[in-house]
Image (tube, rainbow, N blue to C red; front, side, top):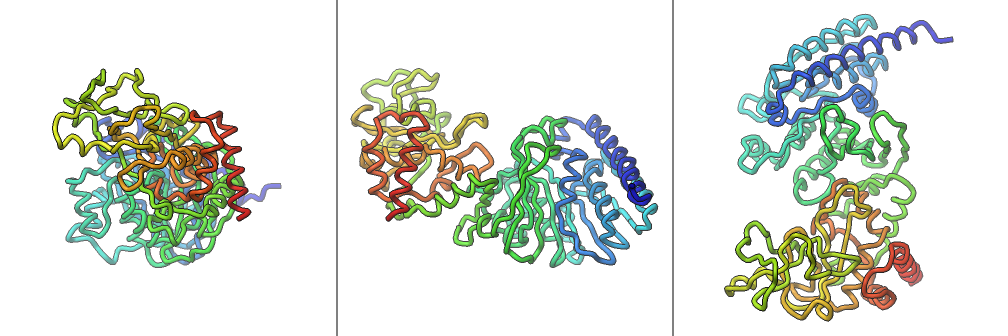
Length: 512
């Protein structure tokens, strides 16, 4: 039999959150397209809001101060209030909800009134203070209140790029952190607004988890809060489907000044699906020796095996005394140098579309220029000298089976001339010169293996493969790379054979 108070709570939840969800739908319908793009607005659906609200640990307290700095129509705020009240986390709760878009404020005021009236039925003293202001300005301006701190910060931040000359970006740089996107700015200021021991919970794009673009922000966030839980979604399209956004999102919660011992990691297809979860040591998520502080999200046994295998490899790229760089030719800036039909005064120009089955197919009809004209001495600066190179695509389609796609440029096959490499490719080289053929082919086999691809996905949730990402990988020894090269044909065999070659090499490495 269901106890009366439980039945009342369940019924009240349906009444409250259904009404707030209706306000969210109304708010979405009222959005101005240009305003939505400028503010980066993506309102939290009810089921996603409930998932986010379930993340914090919430120690019991007499009173709690809560900040929602991008409150929108109030769905996330309401889900958090529902949990705080029904869990009896505090006798009194004060929520500060910040929203800049005046057109949304009526819905937010209605949501706040609904929450206050609902909380009264459970004997909770709830107050909601709605601030119609710019959150970034209010926290970074000359009149910002340094004493305004909170026990819990809950954020679905706006998402929009901040150009280098953005006033917001300059404000955050002067604040101490470079934030190339609005969501990074909101998380930076949200984490800073926490009391010591306070918790932050957010749904945010995963793009900050690796690469150089968000490195300063990532280091600040991970230095400020200790992560307790991380939830990922396999689907990019379900969470904010009614606002048309296609984005790799994660939900994370952490404690300011908390312990860094273990982290609960979970994954589901979308925000309405059941999750699979496990607990890992903090070091498995963020390696203290990683100077870039990537987040590595091993989501199951195969991911953990890939991470363990990668950690067992004996060499870094520095140990191999090799380098990886981005291709030097930016085609739209060198338009006058590009030739559809290469002539004797051209160097081969390589695009991602030239990479086929582990080798570079050049020239190839891909709708892109295949020659780079050399007219002046300065043109040679865009080229790499004759030799063997391993080229890796910097971008892949989300639907592709592989994130890392590598191929060998071999002068025996392609011609012994300098080479122009387009900017959408990364190049493995020996301090600006070519590699030995055996090492180039061995590197290509290793990079095209499933074990490397799976490990790469643990820290990269987007389709870009940066040179910085490739530098963080570990590699087999020179001898193992050479042995793999001698065991494979020039064009890569099918994926199963590539993986068998790599598995055999791993067994030999482990036995040594």
